[in-house]
Image 1 (cartoon, one colour):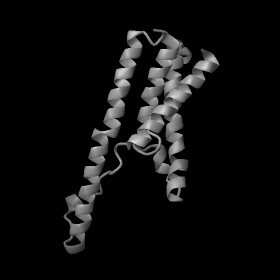
Image 2 (tube, helix red, strand yellow):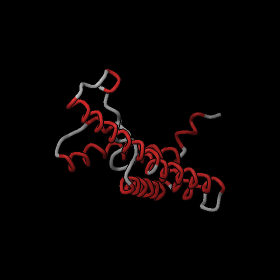
Image 3 (cartoon, one colour):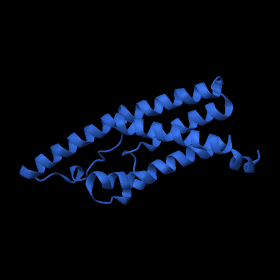
Length: 153
């Protein structure tokens, strides 16, 4: 195994660049929405754009560009991307909605009755993505893969 070959793996670097760019874009986009900076968004799951969607979309598109759209590897990458994006918008989003509801119940109970030690911890509410956030991440990943392909293809 030649570790130096990793530095020439365009698919890997496209995927990493798409993920990193999506994470970097989260604080400024969050600022435009809320008018306050939240630097924790750099390391947090959820938010606009979806870094999960950007990562798998960039990977699949880069594999198609560099290896060919008719390959089994491209088919595998597309199937994986579909699973990840579905999970980000479906299951993880629902888990976030559940956490939001549980936190609201805790707030209601705390107004009339002090919560117990176990219920004082706030649950994470933003686990998944809205379909728009996932679409934005997907388009970002595809665009970045296309850019890399034009530069080095």
